[in-house]
Length: 361
Ligand SMILES: Nc1nc2c(ncn2[C@@H]2O[C@H](COP(=O)(O)OP(=O)(O)OP(=O)(O)O)[C@@H](O)[C@H]2O)c(=O)[nH]1
Ligand SMILES: [Mg+2]
Image (tube, rainbow, N blue to C red):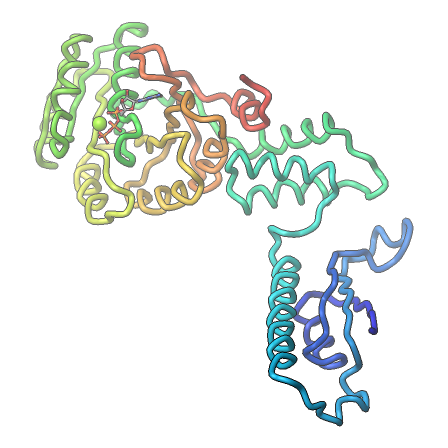
């Protein structure tokens, strides 16, 4: 058996050379990124891909000329081996090509797994660990505490919050059941009770049975006026009616992320409004694939701020980071339970970093 190492730019070039020189039966044993030179000099050299390959015999060897007679069983075994080889090659080459699978030093590997468990968007996990790895010299040992500190610094840069803008008109949109109405009620009560503001509430949610009653209950408890509207024109009239209020909070019906027609219908209402703050409300329990869909499909509503609800229902907080990464919008509020008006707080970068790093209970 011949074992050979190839140094190439990427797996594509490697596969080409291996096939050319050793034929299709060559098996890739290992592939890893290495620096071209050794020591200090090597540190400044670009990384290359080292591929270790094994093959029974070389492509142009004499043994190839004679076709051996094989039993059916041998042929079957050969076929299976061929399939196995090609699967292994595919896996190894995918590992080397996908940035997500690049080898990383063990001290960072633990944090890569941690971020993955926190459901941080995988390309972002990779960006974060590679950013850290890229700045470290290979001989430097990285303690877990230092790695966590560096990662915290990186998270601080990625997480985004903003001060409460305090726009007069605030609209709450988002998928079904995430807590839009409850969050609106929490904020309405806080504006009215703690800040002594005049607040008007409008609901355009006449789709779900009980939605209007739910809002009317909050309105009755807090004594805040409520307008229920059916059409975009009625919405404009209701906003004009509340023009003397410091806050006009507008609740919308939860719309399925996978139903663009529903989201477009909602856009028809929002377009009728004067300048306003539009909150995309999402649950912190939303996995990154769904968050990606939500941010894409709700884009047409031109939301400009994020709220994450139900932090009390999860131990994985990647959504807080994914939200801003995928929408480029700041997170303003976090909600932590069903209690109105208590379970809401302003989003804070330090707090969100600690949650993601697993440093908070
Ligand atoms: N655990 C927990 N539950 C919450 C939170 N916020 C809201 N809820 C609950 O989530 C459920 C749905 O809340 P709603 O406010 O009706 O959600 P919505 O987004 O308005 O729902 P639709 O209008 O039907 O789309 C209710 O049982 C709320 O009490 C939170 O921060 N934590
Ligand atoms: Mg609602």
